[in-house]
Length: 100
Length: 248
Image (cartoon, rainbow over all chains, first blue to last red):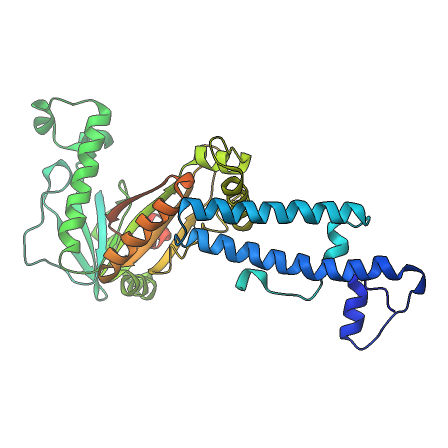
């Protein structure tokens, strides 16, 4: 099992795997949260775009915002629980968020 | 001394131009396929009177204060430029631009011929609009004042602000493709005395209606920016700034 830090993901993408048998559970959680966090950010950007595009009414904006707010709060709880910070979950895939 | 209204490609107009400052006739000084549009300034009138009108003209005026005289001069300047714009591309001069004499006009046209022609090509069939974003609303946006907003809406609003990131200087521009229909735009630096975010947008005549529709859409979607739009104006911001000086 590997240590799935952000750097390690880059290593994986480059064909290298660093093993860390002492820290399997935390590493796995970290990997999952990294993926979730990345998707969450993508969804947020899409939401902003829809709001600015004027295609949502006030009620839809509120519901969407509330869902994203709670998702963000839940992610903060999980980060705290597993002793991770935002940088730990930064998936360095060089996704051009602003162009999505 | 001459007051410079504009630089154009063709001397003369089919319709008579309105009188210039001090009721002096507006005339053309041509050289090198270009022309300066000028009127004489009577130096003995003094600068303020010269730009505002003749003494006799002012005598019967309700508002003969310096500010009233200045306003009158600016209106005359503007009317001449609008008369020119009805017939051809115009590089308008800032109000108050003066030249020594006809010889200085010709020298300037010859020296800067290529740059002036390039600018004239850019502004042909275009007008300028001024966009302004209220500073008070910027502060509100920055401060995240969410009074009255429900939590989900407030959260999305903060996210939106975080994405657009209000610039310290006018290096960036509020998005939503507001300038997508523009031929060009100028972002003005924010200063202590002019803290609002301002932009001048050059819009082709055929694109005016779609552009204004975009502006109205932005105002509706993002009222927190308190966007105001004025125009159409002559393309002052797209005439070469150097034209206000360097007439030697």
